Length: 111
Image (tube, rainbow, N blue to C red; front, side, top):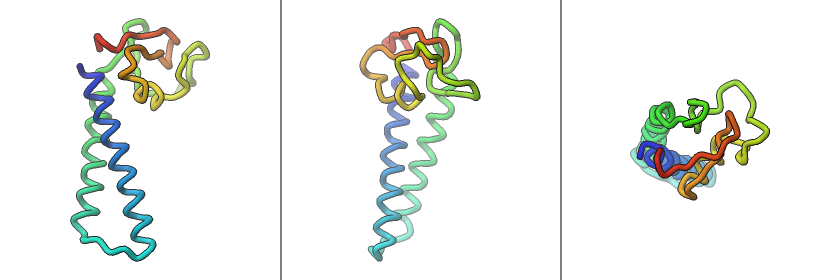
């Protein structure tokens, strides 16, 4: 359950990030918005990024007990089917993801 909430929070943070980029591009072309729109977009991005950051520490691989969506300072395990933490989040609802630390396949239904 926490893994699903973590993935959903990350998806929403990515949507707000896209909204921030779009608002900056529109601002460059002189499209005027009220200041609360920028504040809401940035606030939503900040809020859901913090939620993802907190939940990511609770979603762990059952094999190596390391966080599935936090890369850390070490490289990605060569046997992993994913090459980044964002790929793990992107494929979370497929039912199985690969641990980026030990390379094992993890069922996401129990996490």
